[in-house]
Image (cartoon, rainbow, N blue to C red):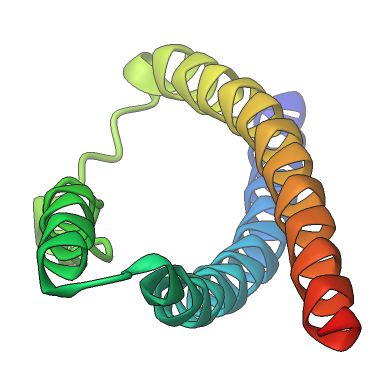
Length: 132
């Protein structure tokens, strides 16, 4: 019976450590999401500078409305009463998490490339405005 108690204690320790890591991840995620929304807002205002007339402004606004309508919203909180604690399904949940984190890692690389591109374009705009 001793090995079972030791295994359970170790599993509780592992899950507690995971929960701490998950909370740090969530905090970072929320900060990043807030910053992305702020950057998106600022970029949106700059994109309006391309509106040479009212028709072009309407076109830009329409494209932006379509883009924003497809954006994901913040996660809804699922109360613990609705959460399953079935350890039999744990390997599938862990595999799903691992897959999601791998996809997220790739998307972060795409985001870094997009940020780099945006910064280049901002530098070009700043240089052009100084030259005028």
